Image 1 (cartoon, rainbow, N blue to C red):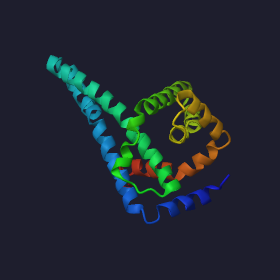
Image 2: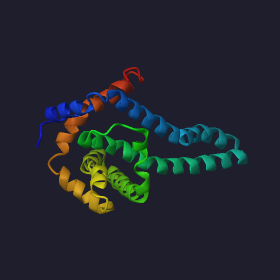
Image 3: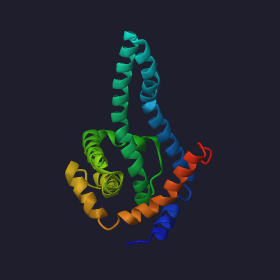
Image 4: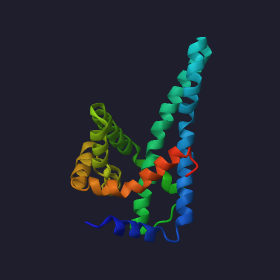
Length: 196
């Protein structure tokens, strides 16, 4: 098992000379993700005014926005999967970050969507118990998308079970790798985004 400092150095070395394309890749993903969430944001704003006025047309617009929001949320899952696994592909094969890489999950849409849906439902069920067990289980399922990349035949619970086995005894190590990013996110929230 490699130490976290060695893993960080390996990641920095893999990104050496590719920082510009990696940053642009992240920015394109963030823009696509935010665009997919526009119907949800619009829905939240209109919901309050529609309930106050009882306007039927507004209710139909809200229904349309809700359907669009759900559709866009479903369609963004392969992009999020592609975003996540692109960094592993870059590390392994020194691939460049391209716009097309964000869409590599669509040919395998059903398997990726179904597996990520099952993971989300499992985490939600654990969240109903308490936050900490859900947090621990989320780390147990952390390798699911990478397993889907490496084994095109594996599906759903088999990928989840393999991830649980792989993460057994390694959840704390992954959490320690995530701490700097968690702290950056908290700093960004505390400074209202200025730290980002």
